[in-house]
Structure formats: C-alpha cells, structure tokens
Image (cartoon, rainbow, N blue to C red; front, side, top):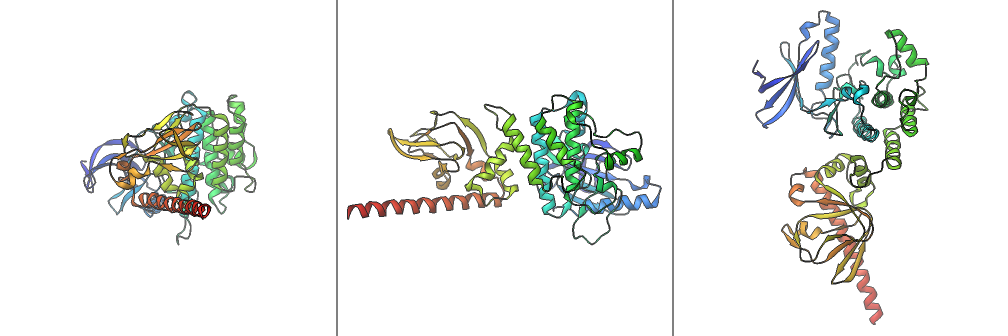
Length: 427
C-alpha cells in the first residue's frame, strides 16, 4: 500500500488488533502526519464492532476542535464502509508508558512538569466540553524532554452532544471509582486517572495490584493505595501528597479543579527544584500568567509566547543592552529590575512586567540602542525577535500589539502628569 486517501505512506509505525498506524506525507501542506487505519472486519462480534465505530465517530467529531499545544491535533477523518482512518499530528518520541519501567523512571522535576502540562491541556479540553475518560501513560506522548501531547480522545464524553456514550470504555487500572461504577462522570474522573499515571511515573508500579478484573475493581472502590514512598523511598513528601490528593475516592476530597492540581505541582517545583541557569516550561508559563503585559492572553496564546521567546537569567550588574548597539529584539522583565542609563545618568528603573527595546519592534527595522540597560538585581529576561514573531498566529501577534498599545498609553499618561507637575512648579 503506497497511499491512504491523498496521503503518501512513508512507513508503518505500529499496529494493534483493530488498527495500524502509519507515518505519511500530506502533499498539500508538505508535512508529516500520523494516520491510524482501522480494520473493523477483525471484530467478529457485531455489537463490539458497532461500539468501536462509535468511538471512531466520537474522535472524528473533534476534528479541528481541540487546538492546544499539548493535545495531539486531529486534522482529518474518513469513516466509510470500506475505508476508516484518522489523520493526526505526528509526534516523534515515546509514550509515557516507556517511562513507567523501573529502569527508565524520569526525574521528579520532569514528572512535575509533564503532569502540569497535562493539567493545563485537560483544563482546556474541559472548557471545550470534553472529558477524555481514558487518561493513561500510553495515551500521553513525550517528544524531547517535556513536550507533552495527549492523544486518543475516542472514549471522550462530549458535553451537550446529543448521542449515547459507549459504556465500559477506558483502561480499568486507571479508572476512577465513579467510572468503574458507571456513574455520571465529570472532569474529576480525568483528575483521578492522571493521578494514577503520576503514581506510576513516580514508582514504576500501579497503585493497585490485582490478579483479576473483579479484584481490581474492589480495590479501586474500597482500598487505599499504597504510599508511593513505600515503593520508592526517595519520592518527595510533597509529590506523595499531590498524587494521593488526585486519587481520593471521595469526590469532595479530590482536587475540585485542574487549577488546584496545577497550583500544587507549581508549588512543589518552586520549593524543591534548584536551578541556576535552566528555566523550566512550567516556571515560564507561571511567570507569563502573572505579568500584567500578558493579562489578556489566553492560555493557548501564552504557550505560543513561551515557544517563540528566548529566556535567560541575568545577574545583577550585567549589561543587557549597550548604547550604540543595533538590534531588533525587544524584552519583557519576567522577574527582577533593570536600570536604564545614558552616559552614566540614571533615566529610570524598570520592574517585573515592564518591557524595553520595543522601539526596534515598532519601527520595523534594525534599531540603534540609545541607552544602556543594566540588571539592577538578578533578572529573568524574556526576549522576542520580531522575525520570529511574524511567524506566530494572528491572535498572538494581535495580543502583543495590543499590550504595547496599553503600555504606550500608560507611558504617555505618565509623561503628561510629569509635565503638568513641572509647569505647575514653574508658575
């Protein structure tokens, strides 16, 4: 087979009982995609075949609807009698299942960042009315060190969709107590499943070990999970508390929102991860969300800013810009303060959330810097190159231009106030 539809097959990536996944080329966009080709003929039971087709229809209904940097995009779906396939974003790398082996466990800081990104992605899905219902390591892809993509929304519940959901789907070991009981599900079932996933990433084991399906369901419903630190003593107590909070059987005691779950992960990270130079993505996202400059940005636009920006830490006293230099990059202060100096005369002090160098961006040309900018404390600096910004989405560019407009109005207002005071003092 050389093609599927209009897509050119490159090679097979993997196969299962009812589907084969291929790496293919989309000739229209000249980009690689993953195609999952389904063969429902292998399901001899017509009831089972009907249920699987229902799952395909569920995922196909999400084509183009979930656009988030940490969710695998579904570009196209064809569901015909003889031809059933899904065209998805190709993610190079392993699923998290690869890292649940005791010999390949990830660092705690990486696990915290991965689960944090999953929280933000699933919070976005919830806002779109989607509950995944099958969160597990095999359905979370990892490209590089922490570029996470959640996949396989076939089992999802789509709120307000006028269809009957397929019951009994999902992976039993990761199901919440309410899911194994076939009760009404909310986003908290995904919180529980992500907690089980986190437990397995921390320890290399599932929280419940059962010899059969009935014993597993009994444990999920009635038995408290073994503490992760008993399976792996070096697991930090803070991570132990987070994973147990996510896996609470009682819905009133489980995390109520994705924001609470993400907040605790960020708190663990801030208090336990010591780094001098590297800035982790979850740190960056948290910094951006706090800055007034980005107050009108959606989470998706913030992830895009994170992707197109260059971050670095600068020590107190270091020069960031020098008078007479030429450049186009502009900067936003994520943390700390800087002095703006001209010929050793202090012009101003800029603090967290302020920006400088923006005239290079606004003038749309290489710009000669007219002042020195020196770190007044230890600084976290966010740099954006206008050439890279041009390749960002229209929404992201609009938000940055709008933020600059607000900033310029604020500066003009401040200048007018100072001039008024000066004139008053002269009269």
